Length: 281
Image (cartoon, rainbow, N blue to C red; front, side, top):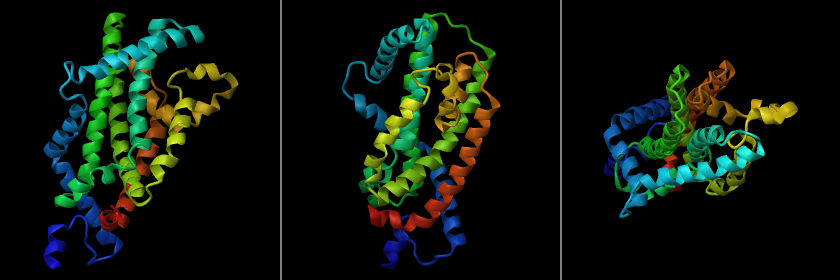
């Protein structure tokens, strides 16, 4: 029994139960998992490319599908909101690409540990490695979808604005925040398998009340719907710079606050229930 505890110390270590020890072990797992970046980057890439395995165009299909979707919606919503098709297409391409990432992080991460159950139980690995793996796959998919925006920018001859470089720190903030969110969701979802189904309606509702397909100015006196929507600020710190606009400081403050809160809660939750995840599987 002692040999097994030593072999699988990442998923079972009940010898010490103090809070400080749990936090120390949790931070150690995070550091070791981050150091294995070659492994989780390769696995994340393989997870994504396997979806188009043995197709003629491979991963290019994601770009084609994104462009086709944006073109169709651009004409429809451009006519509804009296916006130029080109302007609406660029707006939608960024919004839909970012939302695919946001929805995957906040509403699609409950089964991360459960999906990799066999991989987890067969190898002595730090649990956060699976979070890095899943997050890497989401980033690859988002980057692929963002290529649709690049294609449309070239087609419509959109000039590169200096504000576009602000999208880089904005994207980094979102990615840094995404890790603890996935960690919290994966831990809770392993214990309560109903969460993935319970949050599906919330994901659709969040999509509809977030300015992904529409602009905030159309709300008029009901602008509070987007102002107090955290997903609006997550979108704006990346979408606004890419569209040649400067994001409001309020959006940066909101995302930074969420990032700090999620990291604090994420570390505590993982440290508290780290030793139980394998049992819940």
